Amino acid sequence: MADRFHHIREVYSDAVALAPALRRRFEAAGLSPADIVNAEALSRLPVLKKEALMVAQQAEPPFAGYLACGLQEIAHIYVSPGPIFEPSLKSDETGHGMDYMFRAAGLGPGDLALNTWAYHLVPAGLLFDQGLRAVGAGVIPGGTGNSDLQASLLLKLPVTAFLGSTAFFQTLIERLEAEGNTLPQAWSLRHAFLGGEFGDWSAKRRRLEETYGIKIWSCYGTADFGLIGYEEAGKDGYSIHPDRFVQICDPESGAPLPQGEAGEIVVTTLSRGWPMIRFGTGDVAIATETASDGGAARISALQGRVGQAVKAREIFIYPSHVEALPRRVAGLARAMVEVRRDGHRDCIAAKIALADVTSEAAVTPMLRQAFTSLTRLQLDHIEVVPSDTLPADAPLLRDLRHASP
Image (cartoon, rainbow, N blue to C red; front, side, top):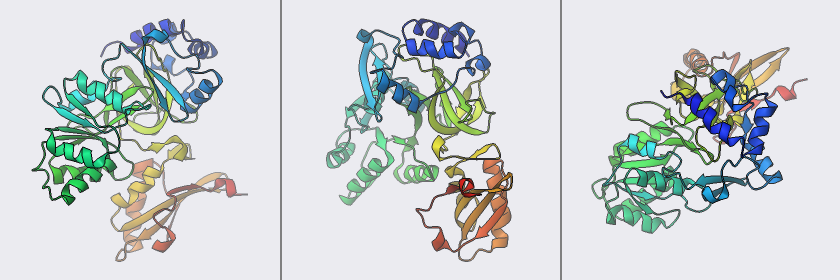
């Protein structure tokens, strides 16, 4: 692996001369870019939260003093909800690294992609478009909506790749099948790049792949960085783009966490112009492989958002942990986890609803084992409740410690 810290020092030494807010971040931490020689030194910089960037841009529009290039170098300015303004440079011909995802999937000249992500204001449509063209594929810039027309394009044109949300893809499939088309025989589609979903996403994508004879891909990216992680055939989770230094950090302290422990995805880009260093995405994942320089080489699928977590006994529990329990424990219909205070100790309790023919004695040991496997914590109490007391829209995770005397 190339010396990424040498690259970081070069990029940020130039950037602090142009970006006063970035320079202030280094000064406040008692650092200069020359000090960033390893992951430990990098971690001395406090995490910049996305919400803090939004507030800073409102106070000092448009870029809050983080722009590290001339305005003449900007090709696009994207506007994400908040609003947050994100510049894209003319020198970027890969869609902020999106080409990595398409190359890993085997796309190239001869492929034709229907891109149904929005092309207006937000970056998704254009970044995917650039990445596709960077690998030599052709693009139909479908954008959002027009489901009748876009469904017909999957049959009238030799479309080999679809890009869009899972829900919109299913809408188009249903439209085509309602018209009497037999899929997959009626189309040329081989790949679908779909927005991942929380919950049982892996099972949903397997069903789509088996039913329609396609390969589904997803990625992890943000408007601030473009591509951060991409899938490779036969490997779980996301391989990290080499120009992103990713750390999984404690959401409160910002300290890097060991491999295997869930935490906030904190990213440092090695790209010039919009140099985000130790930027907290607010998304939660687990590092499953670590590079020789200390950054995450591979991360899991997303576990949730930082604000959804409850910290008990110095470890974060996420709604995705609770949501996974019925999939791991036979006979468990639904579960809710509550964190309470018992004296000076955090108490973790599960309320569960069982399938009709399941006994509590059969479920309890499997539930305890599954919860510990997911969180490294142990359940203190398990309470079986009627299924109608845990409706589908009930919260999966509750922190009741504030209500304790």
